[in-house]
Length: 414
Picture 1 (cartoon, one colour):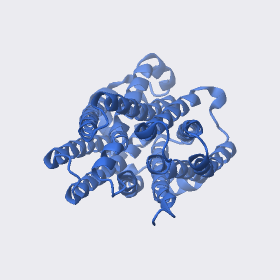
Picture 2: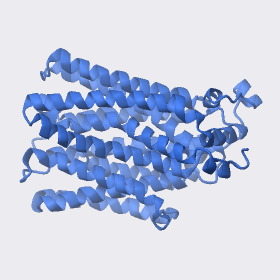
Picture 3: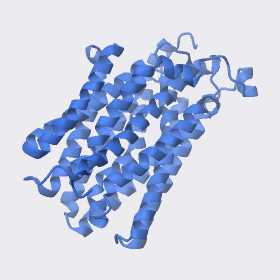
Picture 4: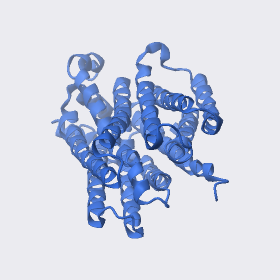
């Protein structure tokens, strides 16, 4: 069965697996995107504390440290337990954000701000625990599953942006209206975590195509898939799985050396994106005809471009297999930084909207390319490790980017 897994998955469960991966991506990123999207509410509640910049500055480094720990020990960690723990912790933190807001009646006290920051840190731990587990799991399967999951991540961004525009119309731009919209968002985010938890724990392990790939990985020596296979009714077969010893495979360090260019590309891609999105778009784009809607429109355009970019690798001619061209396009994105600076200072809002779309499109297209092509040619356990390593360097890029985002404040009283 494993030898014919390519044909097996196409007949039994391939489409369902793609749909579930897409839904998992949307559910996973919805909470963090919700927190970013309701930034206008947090700016109204905590106007002096730069909430958008501070939240991302807390979130990314903590997520990076958590991801680093799990990447180093990924071969011994149950992917199932990692992912379920991440969804559960996300759910708990989002609920507590609602509780803090209700308990303080939306008042911007220092204590409330500190509490929100602690809960953001909890969300970061959830992200670092589960994101590498999901991408590592999908890396040992069909590349289309990674693309579907990546597309789901972008859908989360677009849906939160569109919903924020709808709630802003429905509830108004007053403080009370902003608060109602924010609480609505957080409630939906908590619900998506329950959906993601159910999909990954109950539905995904039983999809025949997924089961075939995981069985193949286990026969190659993977210990990370055993719990998911047990849920699907497959018992452990290898002595390695019983004893907990690791089969021969390339180490994390060796995989990093072999894929160093992909890792550098990933850092550059997300450093550029997060040095602009979302802090610069909220605080440094000036006043325009759209007024209070301007930042929300820019974020929606970025997320829309990101969604398109995560879908374009499905077109064979646009899927970049060349490591050289991936590096060239990744480094070329550095040009966005001066472009955004001059657009904010001299150009009208049309140019800024165009730049946001292009920033999102290149972010989604290049990162999805790397996730799809980097694991090729490795065994199942090594592919799982490559997925974890890519996520680690993605978060490293995010962390550098959110730190660099503060440089825009130079000359503005800093």
